[in-house]
Image (cartoon, rainbow, N blue to C red):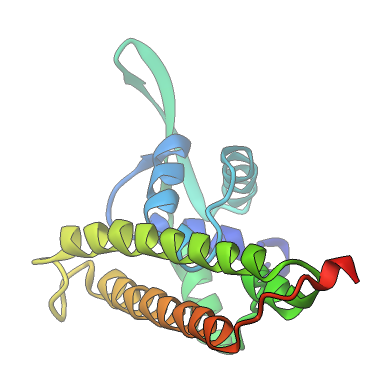
Amino acid sequence: MSQDIPVTGYAILGLLTFGDELTGYEIKQRADMTLRFYWVSPATSQIYTVLRRLTEHGLVAAQARADGGREVTSYAITAAGQTALREWMDGTPAGFPVLKHPVLLRLLVGHVTEAAQTRQMLHDYVAELHGALDDLAEVREALRGADRPGEPFRFPALVADWGLDYFAAETRHAQRALASLDEAGDGTDHAAE
């Protein structure tokens, strides 16, 4: 069965393990608040496609309910979904992350453009990192109190701490690259050659 379920399916199952039923829209909101920092936050259409597949496999139960005069469908993980998620967790190797880093790719070939362009790209990246750090710090703070051992958000808190460290390290690396470019006085416009 696991071959029929994409990793995004397991991510959605995981988002449903915190004891509440969620609509597809609420799953998207939860994914945007969590997954976007270390995986990908799936598009709304992808969430509904995966939810259909999870429902067909009996891994989630869909239930229609009234919400402010309109009917919405909420989803809850089933016992079979809990089992499938546990089997995936227990049977999947840790794996090494695939790093698709557009900043590093552009830095690798930075010699084909003006150094000022490369510096600007790095400055923009540092600004994005600061935004991500601020956003994730808010998420981490929201978990405070529910992050002690045995509490439901212990593991999401560990992921948030890891993410904060990661973004801080990325900031240091980008600043180090900027300092190195500044030290070298690399002002040559190789693109014109």
